[in-house]
Length: 138
Image 1 (cartoon, helix red, strand yellow):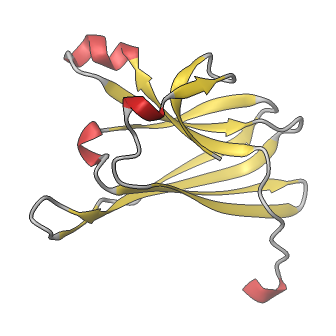
Image 2 (cartoon, rainbow, N blue to C red; image 1 turned 180 degrees about the horizontal axis):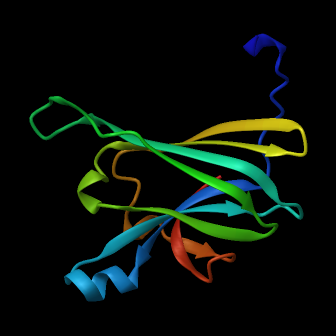
C-alpha cells in the first residue's frame, strides 16, 4: 500500500530552532523554541510533526526521549508556527522532526534531523519568516 503512494520531494518547508527571549526572562536561562516554516506561496494542510531525540549520554548509554506529536490543520503560505519548546540539555542528542502534510490531495513527508551539538550560537543565521536568528534545517 505504501508503495502505491507517490511521495514528491518536499520543497519550501523547513524546521528552525531559535532562542526564546521570553523563556530566558521567565526562568533565568536561555530557552529555545522549535518552529515549522512554510516558505511556499500556498498553505499546507493537515500537518503532523512528530518529534523525538536519540543518541548517547556522557557515559555512552543509549538515550531516547519521548515521542511528541503535534497537529496543525493548516499552516498559511509564507508563515511559521511554533511547534514546541526544546530543552538545551537535549542538544547533545539527534533531535528529529518528522513532518507530514498535504497540498491539495498530495501527501508530503520529510525527516529533519539536527545532529548532536549542531544547535549552538555559531550556527545561528537570520530567519526571515521569524525576523530573528536561529538554527535552520531545510
